[in-house]
Structures are given as C-alpha cells and as structure tokens.
Length: 231
Image 1 (tube, rainbow, N blue to C red):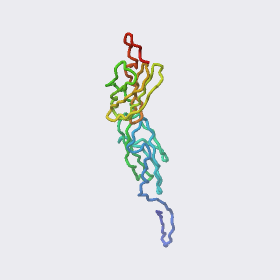
Image 2: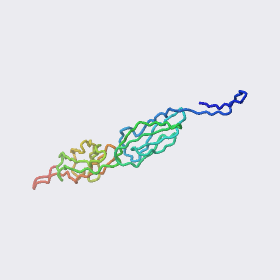
Image 3: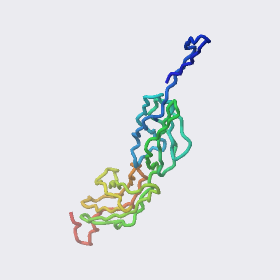
Image 4: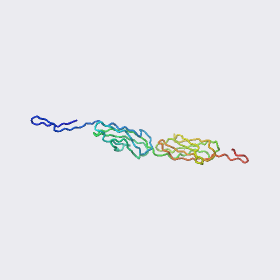
C-alpha cells in the first residue's frame, strides 16, 4: 500500500507533500521439505548431516531458518541453507524438524521426522555348542552360539568361517541373527586342526568383535595293534 500526505492552503489548493509505501505480507514461507536421514531410518553415524529442501516466500522473502533437534533450541541456519550437521548423538531415537520465518515474521515448520542412531558394535558371540575336540573324517560338526544382544538395535547377521592350521579359510557363510542366536553345521573337513570364527553385524551395519571356538581336530582313528591304519 502507498500512503500520501496532502496539504491544502487557505485558497483550497492541494498538493502531495509526502508519501510512503508499505507491503503487507500475511503468508508464511512454504514449509521446508525434509530429505535425509529418511523418516524412521537406522544409521551408524552419531554426527549425521540433516538435509532438506529450502523454503520459498514470494512476499517479504525468507529471513531465517533453524533446525530443531530433539525438541531443543533451534540451531540457526543461513537463509538458503539446506543442511546442518548435528551431534555427536547418543545411541537411540532422535527427532528433527526445520523452521522458517519471513521478513514479516510469518513462520512455518516442516514435518517432524525421526531416526535411530546405532554406533555401537556388537560384542563377540558366545558359543553354546561345540563339537568334540577330535572327530574322524566325515563327521558333521555342529556349532551354536548367542549374539551380544546389541543394546540399541541387535539382529542383523552372523558371518562365520572355518580356518585350518595354515590360516586358510576352508568354509564360510552367513546366517541370520533373528532371535539373537545362530547355528551352523560343517562337514567334509580333511584331517587337520581348525577353529570357527563368528562375527555379528548388527542391523545398522556395525561389524562386531569376532568370537572364536575352541580348536578342534579332524583325525584318523589310531590303528589297532597288528591292524593297518585305514588309508
């Protein structure tokens, strides 16, 4: 709007002696649109960078933005900013949103999203079943174990491998960690000494510590006196 100041003399003559313009803006900026981490995401990084699409304002223009993390005080962000690093955050679920305000103090908020941080690696699995120390060739060997019970987000998978005395890997695989435990059967090992290694990788992708079985042997039975040993 434009305001005019008129003056009139005693003879009725009028003239504009001053004028001023003002802009009325009652419309808030468009709400910022959150981008990443995705809503409900599980992440390893305890200091993530939050990203969003910047708001727009066709009236008085965007004047300020702020990131609100876990309901705390807003972190000021530049007018055209689209990212902000936060943290380090503790393991657990965290919420965030972005607020925007224009030069007429109209404000808008994005949706509120949440993500879960799991930066803690699982500990080593504990074996609950192992084969005898010595087994003959052709024996099916059964191993069982329980996972660490990752306090934030366990599950994931167990990666296992069998190493011979030369450190050569002779068997390997992956089993799901559903329920926090796993089991594997191994067969076809040649005479030698071996160890089974198991590592849990949690749902956030953190690789845990390796658990080692006791050393076990595949060996031919001793020959009886006067009887040749089997070849």
